[in-house]
Length: 119
Length: 108
Image (cartoon, rainbow over all chains, first blue to last red; front, side, top):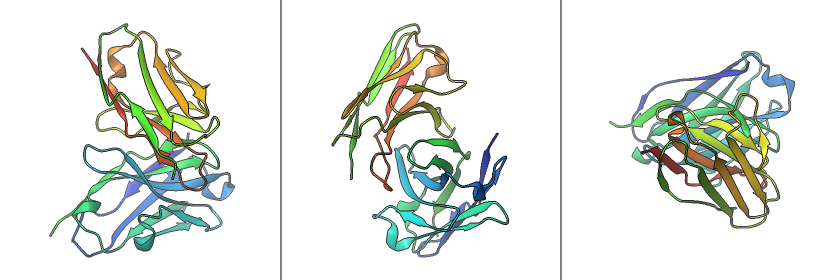
């Protein structure tokens, strides 16, 4: 059973960089066949795709966030990470990591982590 | 960007009633449409993939149909544990997926 777990600071100051890591267990990121994804959900709102990475390092980002987002992968640790720069209060959200089948659905999700942007 | 429009936004339903949620795409997406259930304070859970394919472990009262631009999630004989928000998601537009706005189902 694949499991994903987000980790990182729950509070980030405005203008700083939000950094989160997703640790994958029960399956190898290096096995291929999946995009390793970040999705966020603003309080009381819907789901917003941030971006994803393939094990090879290829990345795809939401155009609306592209200038501020970096997703990286560490296959040796079976982890992938999100960095979102120049954050504002509008970036306050629950951040989820998830596994996406290449042309299909998000089949496994982490429990999510709330990140609040505040001074 | 492919826009997904869900309706209704909210539905209050009596147990054992049938629930129908629709998702309309702004352009044809074939069968590349997936449904998720999100209960309060939980992460989304995959319910249906590729419009109508069932997922192991998901109760059989959940079913999906549709293709092209119009899709439906049906919950037959609603149970109290089905109180949740339901989202559709399209994977036709690579690499940029989009989600519907969600439909909240409340139990009367």
